[in-house]
Image (cartoon, rainbow, N blue to C red; front, side, top):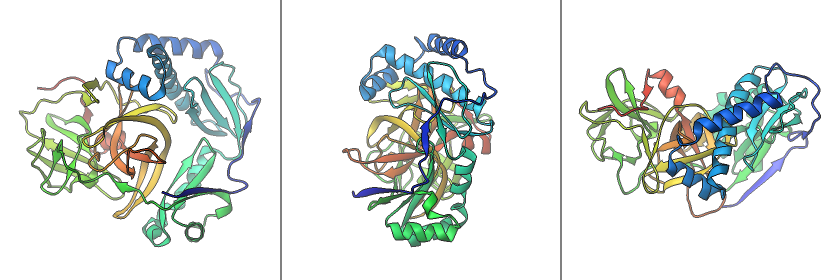
Length: 386
């Protein structure tokens, strides 16, 4: 795969900042430290050993350091919610070392906690998301210009347009009314794909093989969420442990989400398959950018990485999907619909990406779980349902 990045002169303007504008947040050194300590105390003994093992292996850290990282990620989620509505907010993420929370602002912020680093950015998150949204109305034409997708890169304070050629990217930007000098163009010779058909079944119709995401309930109706491209409404699940089942809701393209109803005599478990056992699902708290994350699928099993971006549009050959979350965890054919989990928090179901787990510049995207829960009146299973 051949890739290169073209950065516009004005697209990546992030510099260190002393921070002079105090935002309405409780992120003082004492408060954050106390919240992190409390979060860590709650986590110890309550994080599945398989998740801890995956984190220690992937990030090359100790178990204690894994707890530290999970506690920081938990507090970062709350801090992001506090800051999101403040003027000048340009994003928040976990640093690569897993030890710091990075907050970007166009106005500067005053947060004195040792765990928080403040940087100055050129564009607010709202401005970046508005620019990214300008591509959505012309998404149907994306394939004509060799466009793979687009997303906001908060860590680079830029909008990234992924394409096969620079000329195609610039022409597509012009069609959308976006100045190409204000975006980052990522050139890749390889297009993203849905992580689709493969041998080995966890759940499958007569024509496809996919993975189960998470067990859910709709009232008393049992089922699970998975990827929309795995089956249309009415498709029958005829293979794997969930069979028999039927796709009651399915959206693809546009989104990549589905709800499958299973028989009333099936037992629902709040678990995700790991490399050697199972890990517990306790909630669906959304993890921040930079947070650790693992995924499970029938082809490549248990793979881990970090969250890289949110609200990404991916232009598959079947059409564009919006609102995806991008990660560094690898994915391959057959993993579609499988679980993405951070700590014990369900995040979403596998959609696709640059396929392959043999190294290289691969990435994956998942359909976040909350739009499925909210749209279809579903409840995530966090206790066994017989």
